[in-house]
Length: 191
Image 1 (tube, rainbow, N blue to C red):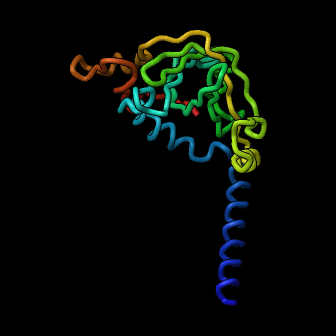
Image 2: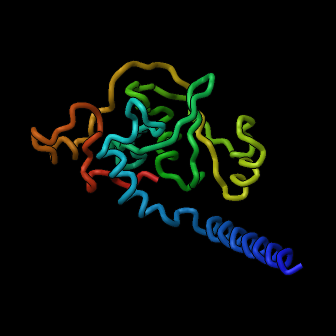
Image 3: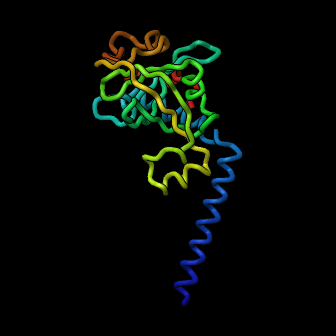
């Protein structure tokens, strides 16, 4: 009997913590994005872990809506018959997704191939039939969305580093391809 009570108490505590996390996330979906933008994303780009031959993480190239600055953002694209579907945990609060929607196009480096993408559309996670129902049920209350993009061109290659990378790298440090040696300070807010 005590074991059942213990399990029930643990389950209730877990549900309470999960509900609290959902409330906190819904009130401030950008929580933690500063860490991702200043620590995680620059290291993924600098070490060439985004967009490489064996990586599931791609590098998305987009242009800032007001600044006009070209940006590189690590994303997790999923192929679809038309192009790609990319998860946007911050939904409408995501700066990179808003940049892509405003421009109407972007480029994606994945597995040493650069894809030209257009026709961006933001859809709620609950509308993605390819996701298991459990995933849709978890993602919908958190406000997760997906950005769908159509592929209109592709070719082997890599995205060029940003101008900050070219200026910061010495000839010995310059990357052979793409953004594999992005210095930490060159990556500007992407989420």
